[in-house]
Length: 157
Image 1 (cartoon, one colour):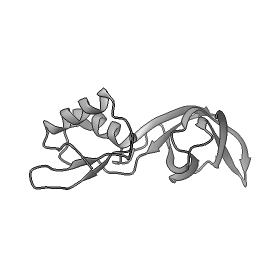
Image 2 (spheres, rainbow, N blue to C red; image 1 turned 45 degrees about the vertical axis):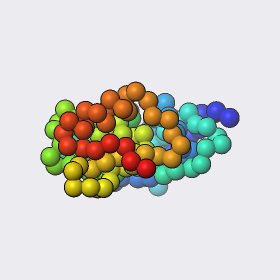
Image 3 (cartoon, rainbow, N blue to C red; image 1 turned 180 degrees about the vertical axis):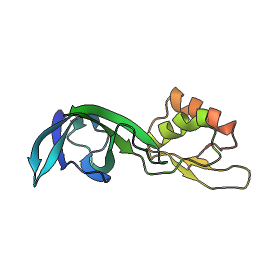
């Protein structure tokens, strides 16, 4: 069954995990109320209530603050008094130092879709371990092809 669920977490500058059903799609974020003196970040997501729960990592950054080197995906922006805050999802794997900037989006796309970079042979910097039983779309194949032009390998099982 599909439903909209609410997830709450105390506002903090540190990264935090939220457990939600796999494949949940965040549809809105707001700051509501407080918990022990901290603003309460509320995330609403469209979920498949039958999906297994997974931990997803988020972090709040103020405008002008440095973002981490790990792949990040913008989730939402909101105003709180004179401040503007931005919620990002952290995907947990550093971008390779030698990866061309124009390929960062391809790398992030594969991570978001559950692919894992693995070192399999000397011919490639890394190959892609595919998630089990997930269909691979044309955008995924195109991202892999573009990364292969930069020395990264194919999908492996």
